[in-house]
Image (cartoon, rainbow, N blue to C red):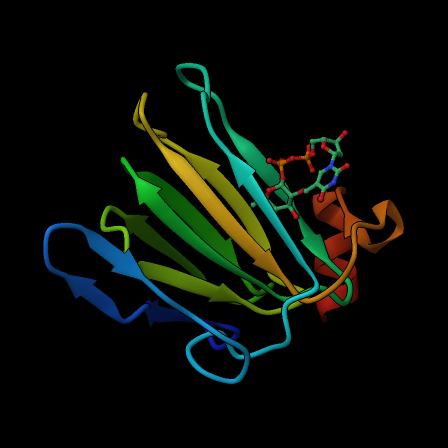
Amino acid sequence: MNITRTKLLRLPEFIDEARLLSTQNKSVIPFSIKRVFIISEVQKKTQRGKHAHKKTKQALFCIQGSVTVRLNDGKKKTIYHLDRPNKGIFIDNMVWSEMSSFSPDAILVVFASDYYDERDYIRDYGRFLELSR
Ligand code: T46
């Protein structure tokens, strides 16, 4: 079942002797990008995330390998499997996210709408459910 505060994204791909993926403000990613971070070399059986953001919106792309992303808007849950370099997900603020089943070669690129600020994180699931009511 899909939830309302997430959606699948597709980056335009240009394939000749290589694969080139592109995005720019106001095209595929539905917010202005202030920060980019990259997660790689994830150890076996690692789960990451387990939080929501009060304000920050994010777009996740697994540009190599694959990862499973579980999302929950406080009412409904959904699961995405990112397994193509150009397939991504938009995650709005106030969506609980958990990432697991990283393939050993996975490289996750994350575009974020805001600068890093630990005060933007909700890391307690009970608190998230309260705030999302
Ligand atoms: C998210 C998922 C997909 C920084 O200093 N700057 C940054 O921009 C980020 C993202 C993290 N950090 C520091 C904070 C922690 O000491 O890096 C450490 C690990 O961060 P965290 O435990 O939040 O990592 P993940 O993989 O659980 O979550 C990250 C993002 O924080 C989060 O916004 O949605 O990736």
